[in-house]
Image (cartoon, rainbow, N blue to C red; front, side, top):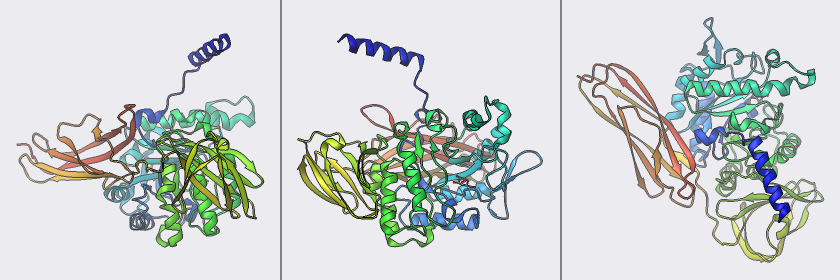
Length: 524
Ligand code: GLA
């Protein structure tokens, strides 16, 4: 007893001296599950990124069913999107993006998707084709907010100039010393710009962001690039997996380890490798940013990328990253991923070139051997059991068994939230007070209805929002009243939270833009 008390006392002292770091997502409610979307880099590199390509991809996201499976963030990566004018301000590259970067964002928002953009913390982006944010942090974040970005990936190329800000003790430590201050400044600049934005840090593990970046952003790359543009690289994917697996303790709702974007559907992977790769990313609670050409996907790629049961473990609200608990030859047993309903996800991955037979006991995965567990295979969609003590799994070369184990035969799905629009645009023409209506519909692909969304942010006097439920969908009805408004443009960001009834914690935050253009004196 004395030892326990002493230990508790020490733990309390330690806590007082090292207060838990603030988690940015605890305030903005963003990325409470790993972000899902699409970025062009893995397939296309810098070329031929332009407005036409991104719009075609947006349309393919919708027609292929990826949007409904939860992939919502989309936009250009390093694709010569903007330049810096003599006044220091960023301007869109109108040759490549004739509608301007704001226009592209509107196209994306009108289709119920979210807008992702890319920049760099240094003087230039990696290819040097675009200006980086160094010394322009606040004005650039204001530009991304004005373009209505919802997600920003910030690279770490050409950052030598940041060195003078935090003098290095010795040269080899320079990167480690610079990364946190530079990204912290960018995080502050984003907050100052006033737009909620998912902040994706991309220093490839330099500066060990898993130790400090939860207070600054929502996800951070843990590794180098997963492939060169255009060709999937299985061995690089395995290298990234190994590096990312070790960092499992750092992941949680709103703060994710990012072992890089998906390579599913790219040239260079077999169907088996595609399935295994996706299973690993789901098990690691990794962001699911597809990187393939969505305009020409095989049925198998679509089936893998939209497997709702696999996505459900990635998007589980507890946000736990699974890890390797036992190795047997070339086979790995991954566990430690408890899910919201008390079940757990387990992955058996055979990284070898011959089939593997793995005897997995319940104690391997932290359960009592006496437990009677149902076993759900998330690729064959079959349930067996209940089994006591364990099971034997045979896994072909490079393949997986992705399983969910539960004391109950029911395997409910957590919510995957899809909204039909993230932008409402109103135009009041002519004089006189008018009432204009528009709506956002939100639905869940989960097993249960969600609690009612609650509008959280204070709304401007010209806007009111009412929430109604229809089964698993809810409608946020927006009413704009122009009475008393002078000619001009008005803008509001609406935040609605979906609150978990027991803990009172937001399970998800939804933001959308409402624009009002009062064309004439409408108020008199
Ligand atoms: C880095 C990043 C990639 C991509 C390129 C663009 O290499 O890690 O994901 O954004 O820059 O140049």
